[in-house]
Length: 204
Image 1 (cartoon, rainbow, N blue to C red):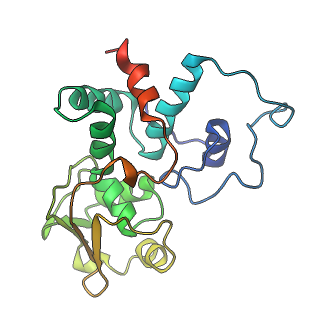
Image 2 (image 1 turned 180 degrees about the horizontal axis):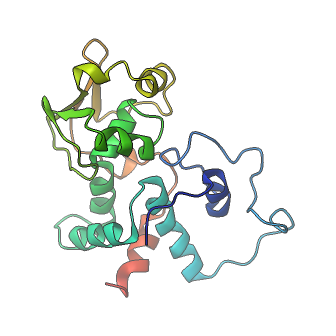
């Protein structure tokens, strides 16, 4: 399944949560599901439905395809760390997410575009792969000519989220250093990761 390119607030309303990686906008004005009967009442959610919804939160916030998410779940399951915890670490460590969390872009899709167009550097070298996995000690920055791009300027002026503790930001150099790998507490929205693990338990 391809990445979602439809109405973002509509997706936030359907999932019942604000996803800062997907959109700067909030569902606050209409905190009920979309559709003609969205504000009438809530339908009873099945166990499968709850697991699916938690999984979809990850997919849409981190802007990954179903195939990519499945691959990450498989990798997480084969690690020595708890599957859910490792999965969140892998998602938070993606370069497009780090560019977003550093404040260079207003959303993860915007960070993905910024990365794909060759504006982002890791340890001084250009990296244009959004799924590139950062490591502790890596320094993420922008190419010299990319530091004054409008989207970068506006995003740094008005951050979508407070920068996480695992990132150290240098205002002068406009760069961010990965102090340590992110953990499950780094995720900026409510997620029941055990339900995601259960969702894939019989599908991999």
